[in-house]
Length: 171
Length: 451
Image (cartoon, rainbow over all chains, first blue to last red; front, side, top):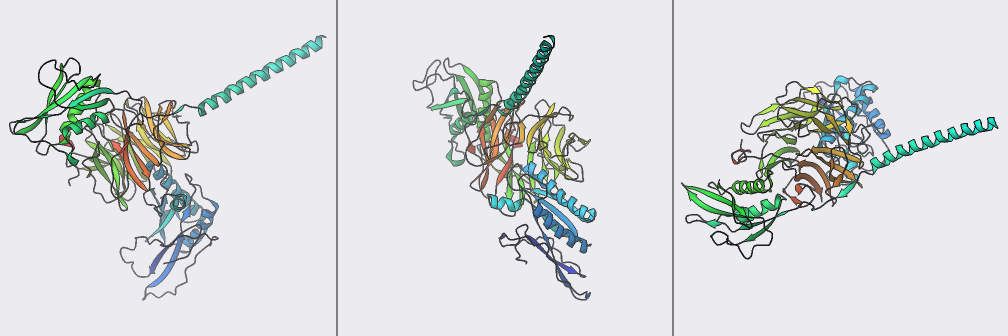
């Protein structure tokens, strides 16, 4: 699992097994266990190129960064746009990837409002990716509101990590 | 001279126009200020209470003393119910000597009525015969039998308490009610039910997904809620008698935040197809869905006025979430909340005069109520913690809400004047999204969690 740190994003690491059927159960999303350390943005994480060997399982790492939002906002911050550009470039290269964009909120505000807000955040990210050229049919959105916090704390440090759109690769 | 006077007249006219403009603008500023200065009042304990006396109950031969959970006697429970009702100030004493007109010398002054009861056997059944008499004349107000059943059910005492409330005040009590709420089960959420006094919790849904925001049908026989069982959020109904689920919201997009109309025939909810949540309404079986709001902003948390004619909801069309009201057809939308940076999660009082909601004041989420025109804001909580989702009891004198404090989210209740706050739930996993049931019969309240 990637232990890369980034101020804008945590990394989801998904092992893609090319040319062989994926084992069932790999939909479960791995989550980094390390804390995020504030560092300058890394524009893009590029997976090492794998030679095409149909007989053997070849593993490609695709790293899509979460994007984060201000409280009660769904507009994309500058850091979010930077992270999304990286994600979008990767998606343009991996045209077979289909994505679920999960909108999340911090625990402040009501359950109902946060479901709507998470929906908005996911839609903001979807719109950005579509404008970048990613085919809309590859993108699905879902809002979990405040129900799936990344950090279970009750302070701004936790909340800032929870106001996010998280990328889940669906294959 | 003539030209000067004309110039003076013009100058005068100019001054008059300027003055008028100034007055007009001052008037405008005044209106804006008045809006900002909506009265905010912090309330605790202003409801007047009727003195009532409870005598020790009489056990006839063949019966044995009844003890509920935690060793509580029926008299303890009745006292708690009557105090909880917020109508009464309760005193307790021994049984009075039989005979007309005899007065207990220990009876507190001003007692308006005296409650007593006899526990007796009748045809193999245990009955609680409740009796209420006038505090001064001793005249009987009512006598009624309540079946205690095999397990000495608390519901019999709750029913006695509600009858006392009814006879003394003309209003229906809420002792025979339960509260539906959401409990965390790891990463999933399920709806649980608990009696209004925090006893008898049971798990209602076993859907192993995110189940949120329950709302009772007015008859108390059905619930609607948000379920992620189909992959994304949808509004789902559940019949409490047959245990059958049905889908209310149309497919495609996210739907959530169900609210029953007072006649039980329609359900309002929020639906988003493209990241834009709008208020919709449909028949309770999901038929004839129709869109009510048309705004590019978030619109959610609908709730009906008790006459069914209007819907209050949350919208961030002003830039922050605030409470709005519209006619049930979607027309005549107006903002009503002007106090606080955010106002969310409205619930219309059963009497129709006030709306409870979450107010963000001084950076703290509290429970407030306001008149339906937005005036007369009362802040009912102002202690530590984050308060959410206020929902009225059917008597309009109580509110249930969730409170996050010290990392734990629990269901709390209070009287509508902010007094009598107490926690109802506990245990592992947060509890939130409460909804207070209408009056329920004993038959309908037990074993709902059974598969």
